[in-house]
Image (cartoon, rainbow over all chains, first blue to last red; front, side):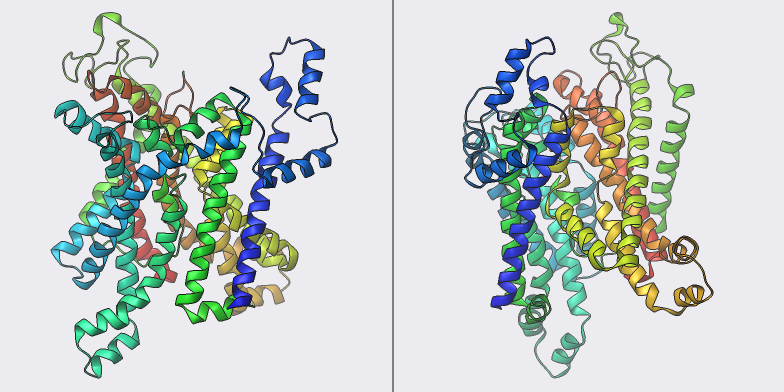
Length: 308
Length: 286
């Protein structure tokens, strides 16, 4: 188990380094930041001063090393727009995003998993077909369309809930429903297929053949085994807690990470984009790492294969 | 956008046992969309930029000339919709083809050379799979700015890793089987082996994956265009129309409902078709 854990941690660290390098390389490939920020007809002295201030006049490997060093200590430079530290700008948006994504995650798990289990246990019943039809619809309906439909019905027509903005609990309801619905559909789909797969296994047949009650077969034999693939998708959803609401936050003008990302991208505020990329990637990688370790803990076969 | 990301996780055994009627309706819708996209120049009653200030914000069917109504500049919604369908389908088509070609080629390379090349490709696959593609796309757009060729190329990087994984896995399996070894023994070069023998054998799995990628790219493109970061005006795409119609949601909801319906019906039809094809074509999922 220890070897398995160490190999996973090393891989996670490698992925982070890869993301940092990706950001650095893409940034440098994209042209001279000095010319992008300053106008074309800026005086050469001003451009030279800008280059010196941002360290752009040093050799590329030196820039890379100092970039990695600073990034590791959370220093991504200042927002080229308002001069505040990019990392702080990003971190202060995290709570707002979590206010939407955490309840949405609860919704996804709370509805999706029971619905998937139920559908699998009553395969081809009306309830199963209905669950699956809703789940396909939930997958093909883009989040911004669902969001706007909800706004149209509950804010414009009925006037029950605010259409956008933040400040009260009522503002969070529509975004949370938007995020939760699509996720619950995916969750149900995965849980159902994981469950069906397990129910077809010989050990389930063996257990019921030796006289174990069906209820016990489900709770002791089927569910724990079906939990393994389900953990992956839950882990993925935990990983997208920080960055999973880009579109929805924009629709509802919610001041979270996603909207910061969209505005930083359209303003080409590169320091903020880099800081966002790192925070999002670190969170994703950490979530994946936990999932991998949980896998190893849940399933001895993975542990044995992963150590080599 | 977390929803299509999620489908990259483990292969699902899920099959939609809908009657073929739903599938045929889906195919009919896709065919209609293809005809509309191909004949866009002939079919559009008005130019997409032609405005008519006397006919602003007409409701659908309010005036005979504008069956789907007009927007706040009096531009014909139907004409804009037709041109948007062409744009969105073209981007999704090119994106899917680029992703499939790139991914399959890398998968073949990994399986052919093994060793370092394979490790490098696997690390790239891991990286791609560990980051939500929307975030990668947004940062590339931030760094490079936006232009249509760049945007289409970017869409081509969506889910290439799925094809790379499939192509590598199936090629490794095929190399163990008799037929690949047989043509190799007969002196065929790698181009011939991969292009004429292995590719046809794994094509069905790749095609099924393309039915997943295509709607995903439509959703991704429309999401980015909706945010104002995808297709830029004066060009128009389905997501663009929704994003723009959002400002008139109270007064003229039809501006955004028309493109939204097209997006949903198209992605839904392709998913139905894909599920059905998967049952029929893909032996690895049986």
